[in-house]
Amino acid sequence: MRTYRGQRADTAEERRALGEEISTLTRRQADSENRVEGRALAAQILALTEQRERGRFTAEEREELRDSLRGLRRAVVARTSNEAEGQEVADAFKALHAQFTCTP
Image (cartoon, rainbow, N blue to C red):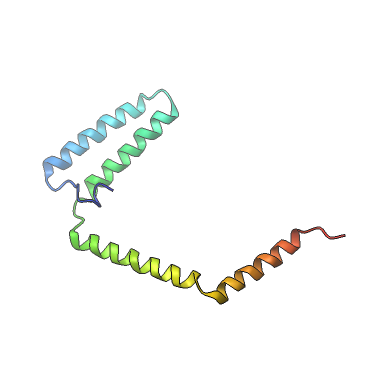
């Protein structure tokens, strides 16, 4: 998310600093005493790794991603608000429900 918001490692020094922070967190993870702490550190390491590796995410790419997401949302809404499809889903559910209903 930091990379998406524009917080990225543009220079070699920033990438090096992120690498050092990742190394520190990795050592802490190896020394962690419980699974919760280890998983939390793993999440931090993953986020920093993505921030370091994806430093070339441009404003145009972000806008393209936003446009794609808007299109996907519109397509999903158009597909699920179709009345005929809703009836088809309702019929399928009724048929499935009938299989599990005990009738004397």
